[in-house]
Image (cartoon, rainbow over all chains, first blue to last red; front, side):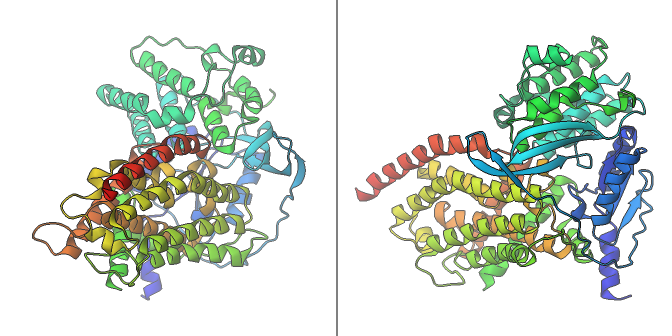
Length: 312
Length: 287
């Protein structure tokens, strides 16, 4: 066996998969996350980082197309696997020709918020993006990293919610993803472990309290989320969004933590979320925000497109 | 040259510690994974610029390492080590920006710009912190500054400058709370489209910067090689390891700080505070 073979074998024992989820892929995604944790693997943030793609759920035609584009741009040796096949990664080592020259959108120009004439770049957020609501795409017009206008498109929907009857776990998942978007991996991992323990019916009592304290006491987190993505009561009512989403990202995170506690104390009241309304309120909220804030705003609303039915 | 190699080992140690804290695979496994991976480029990427950006990051770290003393010795005999270190750190701004710009990807470009904005926020407090230590020792030579602290380390009687230095060390290596240029929210930012060996070289450069920034804190604020029993170079290394471990660890404490908010704190709190510190030091030293 040559040196190259040895290096390859050594490397392949800890791949770094890029995980994509369809609207109905939440269960699969959680299984993959737990699987990665158990193997001490880390997920990739971008497709260029890795050659291993995991597709969760059953993507509809539009999402499947987006996934194919990402797949074709991934560096080899590549392997595309099902969520339950983490131990059967068989990379395809055939070399491909580099450099398919896709057309890249060119910038045009418009006045920015200070009246300066600047390039406008049309950039989609999602649908293939880590810690992003499955099936959602936000088409952004950016000047610099500031969103000038946005349009929300539901690329993949339906399949029924994984979270029915699992409200506390759903909110912990939302907290975990929000924290990852905020760049706090350590806390996000604690939230994900708590979520999985809760789903498996294990006791989380004191660990959840400690986690809650960590989050509530973090001044940097408050500093970075306060005043971001303020939803007014009027806008909430206009879009049919429940009143508990009113406020900024920090308020909504706080609301989730309270909600988790209530659920675990058995005092939660089921109130059907209006996930379509959450999507419809997004463009207005992210307009004027920068990319980082826009990501936090989307994460703090966390719409579940699995409950949206195709005919609207 | 031993000093530069030692700093290289420190960079690997930093990557190992981070992997251990993270519960992920270690740096050698990561390196192997990236080495056997294909090198892909985005359509219409500016390859030369990207390569220059990627390669210049570890080069900047290595060049900065030339003036870092262990005990009384540095690889390069320089009387202006502080200035050289500062200059190499600014080369890193160029590296990250070129890597972000060159690959022709919107998020990568945003990542590159984020580092420039970060530079605007941290560089002035950082330079004042460096100058405070240099002022007290009447020298820009890191070896002289390290030796000038006698029994009382600068970190003890200039706590504000020391704290500002530690913050800016994180910021210059875009690490932990200052990791926005490679942020998860923009799918890895400036490093988003780097694959295979390109990515390996770029990330190695970042650990190199973090190691150098930690090691420079030792002559500036922690008495250089000062300490009982052990030889001076070993004391320097031990202190550098301690600072490095602290910096690596910060990633677990805090979310990423966005510059749209941090820059205000940097200019209204950090700059006045470190200027005041410098004034106090100046008065004490002139006395």
